[in-house]
Image 1 (tube, rainbow, N blue to C red):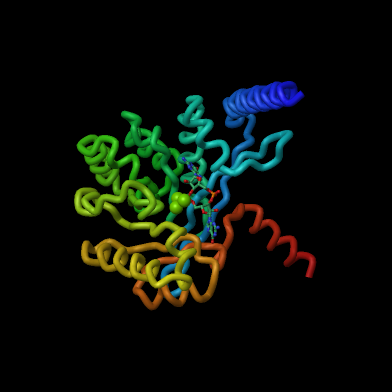
Image 2: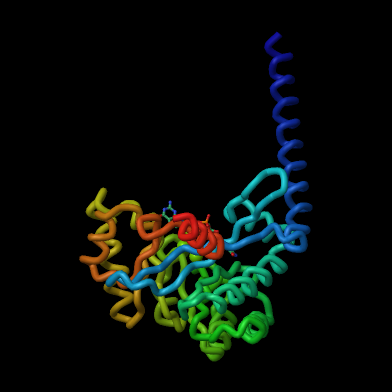
Length: 276
Ligand code: C2E
Ligand code: MG
Ligand code: MG
Ligand code: MG
């Protein structure tokens, strides 16, 4: 009897795996069409200076799937990276972010996340140059966010890529700092304009003395090298106060503003004004 149950469990298990594989295939297929069908859009999350001034926005991609609804990037970017659809998505995000930022009524900075695949591409600088030219966005208003992983893959090559990007006049931020294969030597070797302290450290702030020590050390190190620090994922006033006290330069998180569509908000405000 137990034997039968066991077989049944295995059958259930393999059919669950089949289902997962089918889901993934379907997602890959849909993803390849997503750009053409106009299903991707960008939300923007504000980045503030410690004195409260709005410095710019980070562009965060979302996929409005016709059946599944809105899918967050954490669920489809890894699929896109494995299926090869990432290049088309990256191109679209870069162009769209530059185009939208160029239309803002204030000359704020826009930060765009760069996938590992995009950073590895031979023509990233040409792609950036084209996006700037076609959108009319001044280079100084574009920041690319890269992660530690892409830097250590091939250090000499990463250096060349960064130098050619920097020569265009754009800014480069190191995203999720402290979570990767953190080697402090990157900070010295690469021309970084900003270090983004990962939100896991911010989340732990106020709960442990140790996290405060880490935050303090990262800020001290970055400042010693002349690089400003932006803290990610600030959700509470207490975290904010600690970061200000520790000399953190810039802030981003739900406390200051959730990612949102900027155009939609403008329209909403206009409607509300008209109604009152
Ligand atoms: P990231 O670049 O580190 O972006 C920050 C993530 O933290 C965003 O999640 C944002 O919504 C979330 N976040 C911001 N403030 C808070 C907070 O106070 N609390 C919490 N719990 N979360 C907060 P999102 O939009 O789901 O993006 C996840 C990741 O997906 C990004 O991490 C980035 O690595 C990647 N990603 C997003 N957009 C793009 C894109 O256009 N291209 C590529 N290649 N990757 C992207
Ligand atoms: Mg980012
Ligand atoms: Mg980040
Ligand atoms: Mg992150």
